[in-house]
Image (cartoon, rainbow, N blue to C red):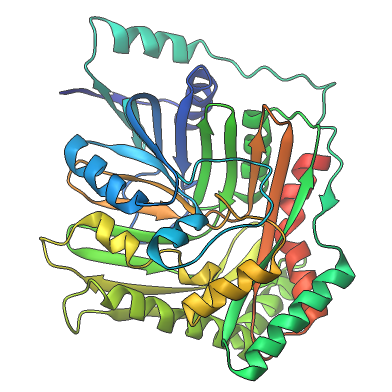
Length: 430
């Protein structure tokens, strides 16, 4: 049983910061923050889950079946992540590329302590609450203060896993696959990394979030492994019998000049190459959703609409479907995983070519973080614009990618990657 209390907040932002500092004492932490971004289909402005009561951690083989069993048996809130490499559980694929991060392929936990933010109040839910535990925690949270060591900046030297000439060569190989008819589109990613490096995970996340203010920001801690994410993209959400997917394809930089910024946004909305990228992925998402949808219920609610974020303009579409009440939530995810925006079309061929041309195992990058509610609803983001950190190995990594289509120019694709990487590099290199 969960003990539930609702607290009014005089200063919600201050309480959120104090709560995040307080959360660092736990080994299992998931913080999801919308940054008050105006968006459809939003349940909470922010959520914190900490302190595992039960958990599941798996390699890719049989992972969705194990998750389905765990979610069904727990029948409570569970929070966690799905790595991109769970593709190998869905299809006859493999992941043999270099991996220095070492995240488990799947991890979920049932939190003892849960904080759900809406407006100027927070709903607190504690599992098996003992005596004055909740009140004592609130006192501790209110006494938390951010400790800043202004003399200790991140000393991070970023290296490229794929250098510029090699990137051009690999994109040209992908274009050859497209011109031969093997695929129409594929998302090609490259890793930037630093070795023998220590960072302050929470402070780095807070800096990244301040720069980007995205609607699907995430701070995740799993023992010695961290995700610091400024993701703008929702992967999949389920509300009762409605399923919502919101793929992003199409990116343009921002300008401080208002007129120039508006021109960049308008140019993106009219860009034939960017629109075709987005529409191809929308078709893929429609096909994925149809696997579990009630016949005739898949709809494109919004096609290639341009949204503005602090760092970039993005082209986003919204696709929805209806499912039977008996359809299991995990089956909906399994039938659409990995998300089309991070793979390509046709999906399986694209994933094979991606594995062949990329140098690094994606792991949690281009996977997903989110939660299941006790009723079986869920909400998951896409892990992009993110820093991954293995504290024990002292290894820091961020990856960026872009959709390669027949109209792609390798130089422009490379420049788009640098635009997407800008915030992560700024935060790490100061």
